[in-house]
Amino acid sequence: MNHLEAQSYIMPFIDGKVPANRRNDFVLHMRNCKRCHKELEIYYTLMVGMRQLDNNQVLSSDFDRDLENELNKLSHKAKTKKRVSLSVFSALLIAIIIMGFATYTSGLSRVYLYEQRTKMESQGDYYFKDNLEDYLCIEGYDRVYVSDEIADKNKVTAFDRIRGYQRMEKDVNRIIDFGEEIRDAKTTSD
Image 1 (tube, rainbow, N blue to C red):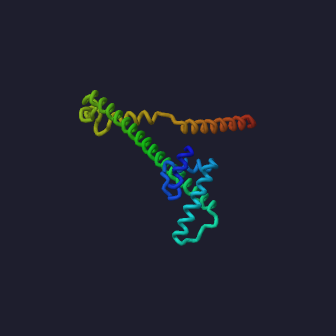
Image 2: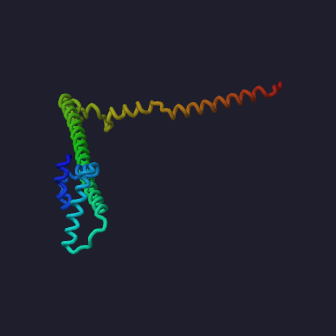
Image 3: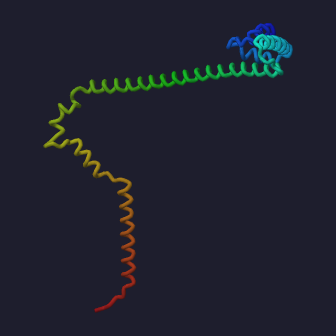
């Protein structure tokens, strides 16, 4: 903001009508430009003093402090507006990202379902239970299920191996103990 613009906002500042988009610039200029700040002090003292006298109010004893308080309020309003707009922008951005992610996952789900439906259609009736029930089930038993159970019974798990090693260790210890007993046994002849 240049000097002319800043000076044009002195009266709106005193009236409390500085446009929201110019508040921060006005405060910054007044705090950094001694000449404009001096002019603002003069106008503020005259205008506010005259209003206080016209309204039969107690005349302020420290117009400089009052001016600084008003500049601080205006600066705070500008910063608050900036924070609110930044918060709204952030919320909108997060909402857009969430909607994009939801749309992406929905699209993936649709593609997966389409592929599965295409596979089922290409396989035809061969894979459906209605057509294969006579071949798969004998006397109420499902051959595939029973064969899977038989295969699962023959699988050796890690727990089975551990138990086997423990049994082997006990057997080895018993054999060693038995061998020591035999070695220590006295032979007798009858």
